[in-house]
Length: 257
Image 1 (cartoon, rainbow, N blue to C red):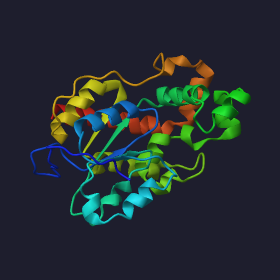
Image 2 (tube, helix red, strand yellow):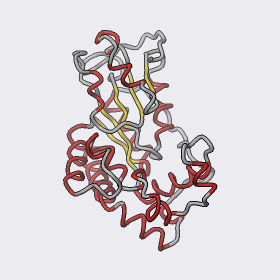
Image 3 (cartoon, rainbow, N blue to C red):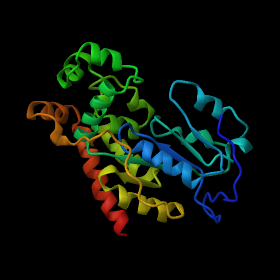
């Protein structure tokens, strides 16, 4: 259930005096998500928000609430692919869909290190016990989270559920269309300050400052793996590389408009 608080902020949804709401955040893993969720909680403090965990039924329970109860919720955010903005169907509001992308090799390296480091991750025990390598991820385990995961998230539920190696150019085109026409605003982790400035202008946010990105002791980059592993990651994330290049170009166009 959403957290309930009181506030003097008013929902905008396209014409009010407060920050635009509702916001639906498509949270791509290891792309500044914790930082952005903290900012969302700050901007919409006092309003009901739902930061859900996948596969727990929270989102389905929210869908089952009466429309008048759902429409009062300012933010819904979680690791769910594009399209779940339909949770506001019948509420007479148009949610503002937002997301953040990250350079694909750096995102994969960050995810790989996170699983090794975080004892709460479902695969942590396996990764540590078997000393899982990047090569294992792609050649033995074949994990979809390391296979064009940004494209999976932005192409929607159909693409998201495809097996490892199952995405194609049509999924990329769908992801690009959903990013350009379906997201009210989006960010790039590598341009996070500029991203926040655009979020603020587009969504009517008050000044939020410049927070530090939530990250490991040292932020992962594409240079943190050897040449062989980097080529392996690139080979299995070619669609994400194309999507990211598309996003960078679109970001430049829209931020400078």
